[in-house]
Picture 1 (cartoon, rainbow, N blue to C red):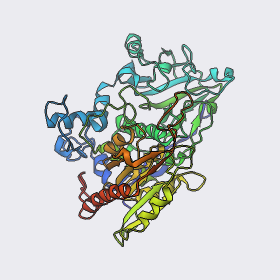
Picture 2 (picture 1 turned 120 degrees about the horizontal axis):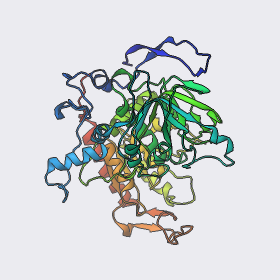
Picture 3 (picture 1 turned 135 degrees about the vertical axis):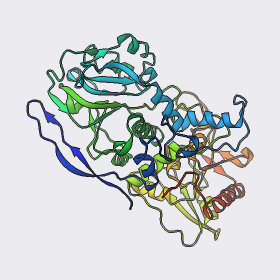
Picture 4 (picture 1 turned 30 degrees about the vertical axis):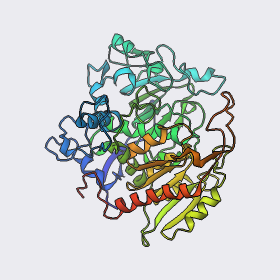
Length: 499
């Protein structure tokens, strides 16, 4: 394992009038080896390594470039423009655009003053010496989730020169998961900091408003945007420090089958609003990261141009999480195509002739076939992504489990058996991650159990079960196997591997 040992100053929550002196602690930088030069030299103006958002980053030196093998899109005047649009929509170009928008909403005039900086529409903000009053939580008779009345006027603020008109103008995306407008519209300047705070939090704290934690597709939108926000907020060796706290902006205790993912971001237990119920808390350093349902945001609601693939941001996120969670690939000794068939343990979108299809695959001498049910009842999340990372062809019906494509190796194939009339969801996510995507083509060789029965909308393709023609299924898997053989053996990564 290649990593850099650094010494960092760490201290815990500080009780008001009872401060604990910080002590030196040994902290590992602990990042994927391929990322080291981009982290260590990101502040060096003469470096030949840059992620792609730095002001001095030349195209030939950036972490990776997307590819656009498809035809030019009608609204892209050239192939180069097509690549540029994709880079800005779903790659580090998006981070660059957001970083360029950051401006003061509350500006420090003295060294020890507070500060608040935000992007347009308050999609991302960061602050120093910010007071938040959580006394409203004492009067909540129901759990707080996706609510916009956690704070009232004056319950968030700082000692700084407040540009109220500028902030008010950016409070236009007023929605729980689209921006930080619901909270920051109540920001006020205060005369003294820390004033009457009950607690002072000295470590950096990320405050997250998260999507549905039971659904991998939605919850990983949270994690991807958290990773992108770390790029926006920092540079150098502190960029991915795990000596940070995470505060979930809801009163329910955080629970998720995917909770192990937070181990890639923090060494501390996750907080929620009840952690500070009824208290006034001062945060020396806070980050309000990009959110899961932003208008034209990352991952969800991304208006992705046709014909392009391989986002360096999504690849780096995958590498970062896999490395931090200590997920490795096992040696490929027999050079068989490793196929993982994701079996659904749900009421709808089951494959009625699943056993027939798996038996047909198992009869192929060049395939190594594994059937899995990705549920915390059977496998931990780390065990699941370890299987995924050691998969060449990942097969499954439309559903959140296909989000595992984020952790497939670069040469792999996602075979979405049928998209259930939701054409772009996992196709676009596969494009962003840079893995080949295949789905069912001949609708005459697919059978629906019935027309489907949505609880409110009647007939619906997602609310029934399916059977598939065996020969057509094998042909599509064979197509995927050819791709794996071409890419895996003699494979050359697109990214610059300086190590």
